[in-house]
Length: 268
Image 1 (cartoon, helix red, strand yellow):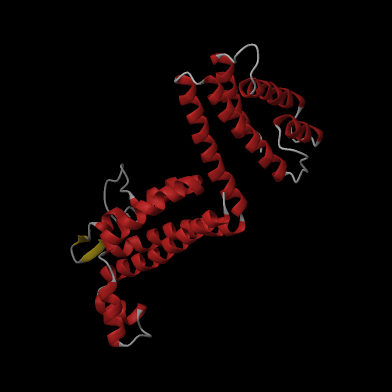
Image 2 (image 1 turned 60 degrees about the horizontal axis):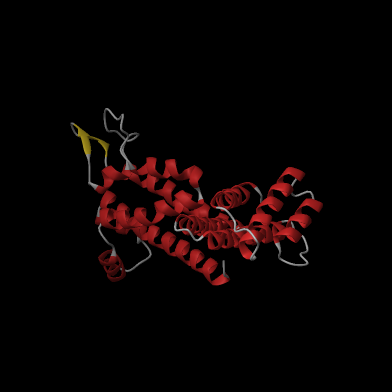
């Protein structure tokens, strides 16, 4: 992944957090009303400035749905262990029997739901404010992780790219282009082994699968069975890349594709 792509991801996160701040303003405006909102959130602004700011705010439901649609895929990809929490803050509980402050969700706030018992308010949009704050905090955690571990993000996106290339190899194999499928798989294997060497700061004399495999084995990054498996895959790849007396078989290239997929998922 290029530095420009990494910077794009950082900018997208920054934009998402900035938009989240505006969504939070919209929620507070609807929850507390204009006068109370201006008194608390816009106390340092003149009346004219406050009026202009409020005029720029989108209705909460529309602003939130756009934000949520962009934020959820990001959470699922970059912080998957928090994805269920992120969704839980939004969606109504399926087992909910009554609506109160504890069971109220952002989805209810998007509908402007207000629940009363007599003159008492059991739950309204104010109940969604801490839930949205939790969602923003999850996105902020992604930002901190991104800033402190750009390398991890690079690895994640690179893994997605390798998966796509292996899918291409499978399509080529199904279409009968055996050598081409093997060549694509070999490029993926070679690229991943180079990255693993970089991960462990190992010097590389060349980028061939055999040399990279030997370097990783010598540094005890991989064990003997793993090394032999990689050498086996390398032999099939070489068979695809050089004109031999016998062509690589469909089953051999199938083994190569599946073997490469196993390597990129288990060796780091």
